[in-house]
Length: 313
Image (cartoon, rainbow, N blue to C red):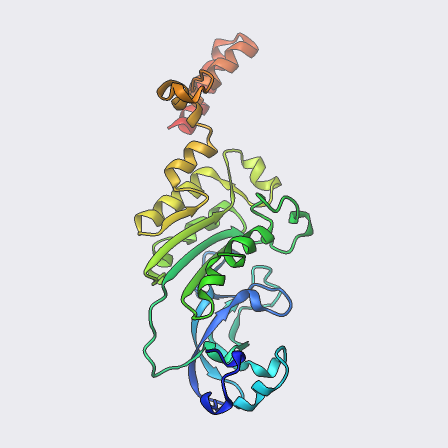
């Protein structure tokens, strides 16, 4: 039973200041709503502002003040019921309001989420990779909760709503979440094999809350929009490392759906679906055709072909 469920004080051991422990950290517990993660690579020198690291999971820590079981007799929402610890590592929030990452962060943790260092640490049942947009606090992104990837409320529904990993595994600390807060497409290259290595759960899964687009202008205009090719490349890389893509779909299927490539295939291979007959043009063919029709200019068509050919390869 948890201490908060009424375990007698004598059954819960006192913790002394300076004691080495492991603490179960959950970034969404921040009292002011920030989302600090324990950085995967504190020494990153790429200049990227992406924040990538552990947002839920067990972290080595030091008890920062004495804790006595008698505090469990206080009201259920009293802060002192939790253990104040200093989490080891380097932490940062996607908004990066601090002049530098925080080295050693103070945090209050439920007593049942504290384990002595000497006790063997069982591996997590589930490791999740969550790749998401960085601007989680923007009020303009609070619309369309059912499908807007920039709306954090949708992410919270998935990650800690009913039947979520949080609801099923938080009590025992049986899962971990590694989050990547992305600002632009190039940030996706920082997520790869090193991230997969840090995911030590029995089951590993990736969730990608971003909009894939083929138009650079959309990346600048739309919150959560990144290059389609960069996003699919990351998904395929993580799948190759044994991290299954579970949101929104495996990379192969998602490419068919996001690129609307399925209609031509379904119209020919699955007549029972009654999809209207559809054809696909290679980008190079379409560009040449449009250039010729608009200008009736063979030279313009040849120039369009030279530009479009790399895009189609």
